[in-house]
Amino acid sequence: MSFTMSIGSKAIDFSLPATDGRKYSLKEFDNVDVLVVFFTCNHCPYVIGSDEVTRKTSEKYMDKGVKFVGINSNSKNTYSDDDFPSMVKRMEKYKFPWTYLYDESQDIARAYGALRTPHYYVFNKKRELVYTGRAVDNPKDTSKMTVNDLDRVLEEITSGEPVSIEITNPLGCNVKWDGKDAHWMPAEACDLVL
Image (cartoon, rainbow, N blue to C red):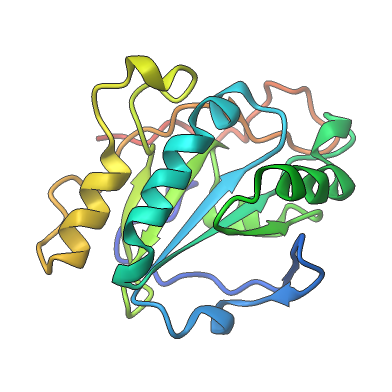
């Protein structure tokens, strides 16, 4: 079995605090047709480099029943900038159009098999996984991107079309696992095979 969730898998429930002071679980998003869960953080240059493209993609599909949920699972002991107070400050500053959750135990990152920041998971109305991987092909410098896989997937799914490419390799920094070197990954957490 691979580390990352496989296509067709059901979304895994969570109960996590958000930067808006509330706690969220999957049922809070029952009213949306498409749920994009993405593992992100505060400090990663790939996240910072692509945040505005992610914002535009989120805003583009908001009226088509799509909701974005960002989850920060990075250990604050590896990067102190990834702690919860820094998440709150970041959302206050940038006002991103997604719910930003904190997975301090890293249990949700393990359950989903998050490999990198950012790593995207797109679920349909039945909360079945229809896509996992990257958003764009150059997240560190989106001025050089040539492909926006996330936009393509959301265009396909909101138009009632099948997802043409279901898996891509996420591009970014490793998830920062508590007590491990910043570049460590679980042995079974190989890159996705296309």
